[in-house]
Amino acid sequence: MIFATKAFFIFLPTVLVLYHLLRRRSQRYGVLLAASWLFYSWLSPQYLWVIIACTVIDYLAALRIEAAESERGRKRWLGLSIAANLGLLFAFKYTGFVYDNAVSLAQLFAMPIHDRTWDILLPLGISFHTFQGISYTVDVYRRQIRAVRSFLDYALFVSFFPQLAAGPIVRAAEFLPQMTTPPSVSAKQVAEGLHFFLLGLFKKVFIADQLDLLFVTPVFAHPDAFDAMAQRWACLAWAAQIYCDFSGYSDMAIGIGKWFGFELPRNFNFPYLATSISDFWRRWHLSLSTWLRDYLYFPLGGSKGSAPRTYLNLMVVFVMCGLWHGATWAWLVYGLYNGALMSLHRIWDRSLTGIPACETIRATGLWKIMSSAFTFWLVVAGLILIRMPNWEAGGVLMRSLFAFDLLSDGSRAIPVWVPVLVVLALAGHLFSGLRAKVCAVLELPSIVRAAAYAGIVVLLVSLSPGVGKTFIYLAF
Image (cartoon, rainbow, N blue to C red; front, side, top):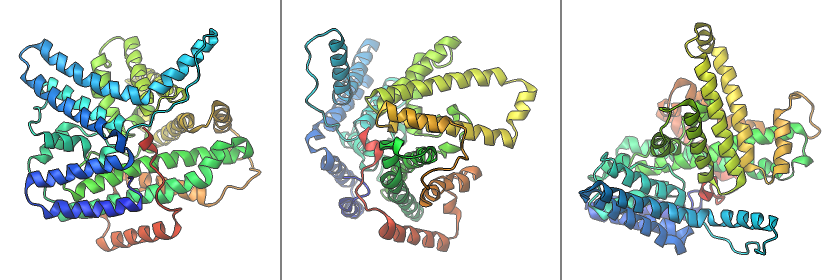
């Protein structure tokens, strides 16, 4: 079951009504946990045991970590939790990738190993809930939080259905304190929940799905059939699509969470306004980037060591970031690409910091505009790597993106709705991001917002290609 389906529009109000009709804490959370496991089972019924097993292991490990009298015992239980989560993640997500590359390597030496004839279906949200489990036991080990005594509370933290499939990755310190008593839902939360749910649905169904089905997929599948201008617009459309698809899911998750009284963390902060690649990663998929910072980059030493060690740490983090997204060479190269950009930016930034003339130039509006444009160009180039069907097609698209004949006439006209949807996807960046607002629409008069919401519903019903297309990040 995914958000933009008819089944979900029956499931959600049913769960909301049951949840709010009940008064006892255990009953409310019991219904919500059962609904979350049903949500999980809708797409991965054969793998329900995976999330339950991870939940039980991490719940017990945290209790044992807290109760252990020796540091050795604490580390043993922490290691069990990490090994269980990463072991399951590796088994389901990376076994095929490792086997395929082992076959390729063996064939170089004429070893008789057969190609893979099997495939492994990825359990729903495994990349997300395993990271949540690891962060929980690590935080208990660091004595930053107490271990949860109630299995029901912990299981709901792991399985809470709005963010179960594609994040955001929620920390125990953010979610569990809200569960002390069933949170009451304010009128403000109802209104904001409606806003974020409709905004996310609009981004997904009307912008992301339209761009994908009618332009991005055809051009990326056969770039040679299109001229350079169409290829460039397809790259821009892909950047708009993945942003609207992923941030749309996060917006819907935040909105649904508010209807149950829970506040989920923000996952995007207008990333295409970033003035550097490091700024981009402080704005894009915040829950993952901060997780990698706190549980991988800092334990590796962060930037406290020598410059070469810092750059090595950055490369390790972003290679892991790439592989977390997908077990392919394209994702590995994407991680290497971003790690290299982060290292180069650090060298560049440190060389200019403290020089008065450079600081003056960097503070100007023109410099910030140029920096944002250049950063966006680098980001789009990286996004080609994860969308291209093969390396040959990726090379064609890269050559068009990096070419300088931007004003050349195309042999095939670009449909007018393509730039319209791309601009619409970036409108929030300009309307809210430049004003440092989470969403400036929420500050508009109620009548204006009501009209906007009604307009969104009309557009979704009349112009969308239909609901049911999966979210991109469900594959991760």
